[in-house]
Amino acid sequence: MRRTDDTRRQCADRCLSTLRDEWQILRAHLIARGHKGNEVTDAWIASATESCSEHLVTFDHDFLNLLSPGDFMLLTVKTESD
Image (tube, rainbow, N blue to C red; front, side, top):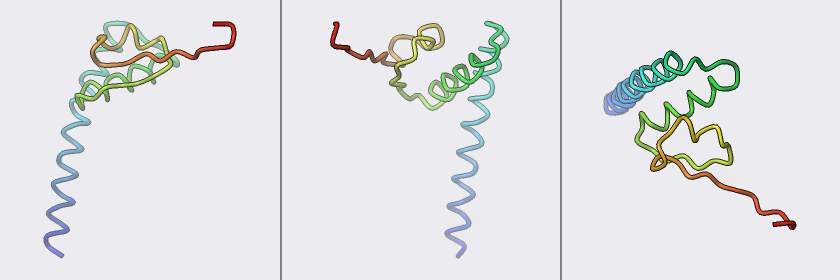
């Protein structure tokens, strides 16, 4: 039982550390760019991606202004007219 408690504690510490980094990045995005409405959720996703050193794959063009090109891949949909 003790091992499980230690594992949970380590997981919680790691999660809180990541959230702390994420919040600092999100706050900086919101202050610097004055995001409002739907832009706030995009900024939060970008902050989470950046704080975890992950790569975002999306159809949303808004991330062109939120993440550096190496941090995301913009997908496009090909239609019959293309």
